[in-house]
Image 1 (cartoon, helix red, strand yellow):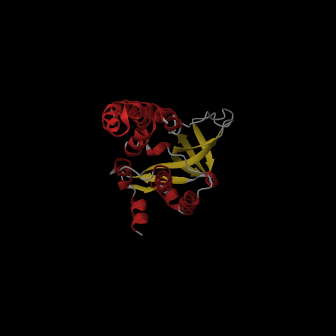
Image 2 (spheres, helix red, strand yellow):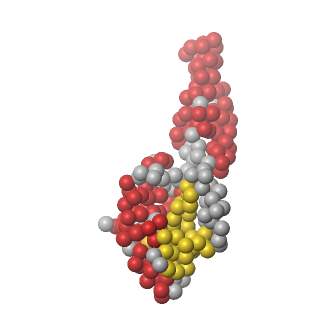
Image 3 (cartoon, one colour):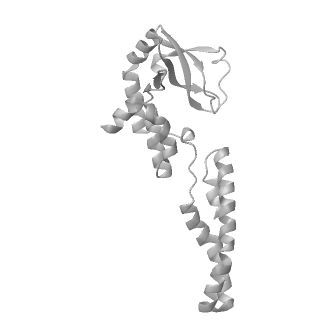
Length: 220
């Protein structure tokens, strides 16, 4: 039972946290064997009470304790299905408002970021980069988030890259007060997290308070 729960965890960090969590569950379940045996042997006798209590400690107690003691991984590692309809809607909205990014870059008063996909031999990853300017229907970008996969070195030789506007999946404009425009795919992350883990802990939602467009979307 514990091994099954372990292999359901996601990512190296998630597995480490789950190992510590499951170790605690195993210890707690083992300590419940003794009071369980004391109670059960009155009803079933020592010959049946012991194996029943052992079965409870091996299967039943770990299952219910794991249900209560749930590990919530960081929200930024949640995997979003490429065919997720809500994620596609968020990307579509971000692309429909790219004129706001262009205006923000022209004004130069806010920090600008864009999200795009990096391809590699192992797969593809969606990363954020600093947006410097828009030239010839492309955005000049410096990568700021580490991709999960190793990028193709032939396609990503330069520190600054030219990303076609059609490849942009999201954008953000952040002022000096920390207020952020755009960032619509963060809602898709929240939606995917809810699907995979049942709920999103409040501590993971705090960083969304400064996303002005997301607050408007949530209030609709």
